Length: 268
Length: 206
Image (tube, rainbow over all chains, first blue to last red; front, side, top):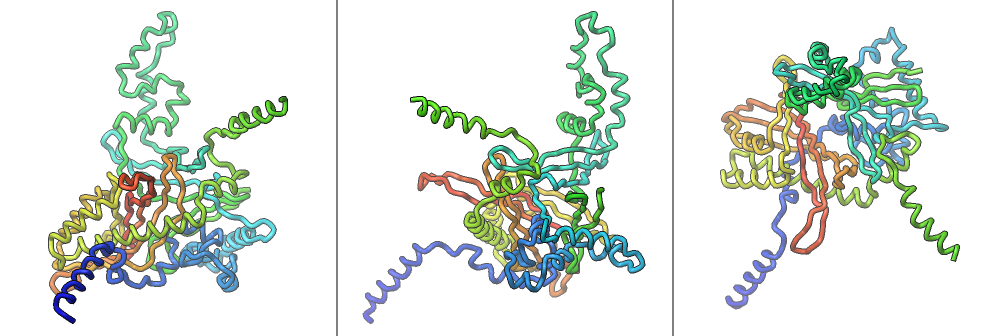
């Protein structure tokens, strides 16, 4: 091949290469990944994965459950993997009450006549978070309950449904300090102006409102006296007909780890 | 004439009756709502594939940033590129198992987390990700964006000379936001995957 033709070929090849997209990182990631140990497939890594497994939608690898899987692992058997097996009530052979309760629940869930499922947006799931807060310079904690809400445009969000904390005990003192005097009507409520001097004028609302922890929580956040440090842990409460189950994250290195059923209660 | 009037009236009345107030979902409408707020299987597959690519891109950048063998320029570039994958203000929350078994949690802006990853006190670092990437379903938020989360598992090893001095396995939950952004070049709107806050939980320490 003459030298000038070889030169043209090289230039042409370089031209083609320059038009191809640059190699994206994900194409070159074979060296950065390694085979996943089995325990991480078995681990329930997300709460959504817990729901998918409970509803018998996805297998351990996240794939849709097919006939082969159904034949090997019927739903009753598969659901057994969603329980915290290290619970002493599951291990204590002398006390079979809790195991009986779990079995009764499972039988009801897989009942062919009325199988039970979990829907995140149906109102049966409540998230409960233990939150570390700082209130007036002091570290404390509170429990916040969240509910999923579906909007008319079919979008969804979580909303705070309730806040529980002991950190607003000082409100009782403030109730004796900040109020509209009982004869104020005679002076056309002229002392209403006192609201302006208060850092949190909520004290002028009815006692039932100002002792509402959820409302106080928000107003105190609004005045910057309350700040969120971090979320310590989250659990989910799921209601079925006459059952309440609690799902917690078990962070440990075993096949039985991740989001698992930590408790079952009969509610009727 | 009456018939035309009746049809027009029905057409105008239907949307008025279709308006529903904001409410917490109730069980009776469960199936319908779930069907409507979730995407079609085809859309989910496309979003999942895009999410997987974005997560893998992030993993590649993490490995480059952490690698002491790579030139500083390349690591700085990876840090810059990694930040572009995130929504502004994204945070990294890490949970570490203390020697007494207690867990401490700390949050840092993503910029700080990545900068810190560059200057870890080891002579060499190996970061590997397990090949499993779990992506949850996509749900529409009130802002019209779609939200999901991806789980990846990272194995970190730190050396001082030839000695392995630190090793852990961390599960990372990454918030995924799919936003409709305007492509000015093609003058059209396209769905784009962004990463959000990350919750990193240490699961194993060697």
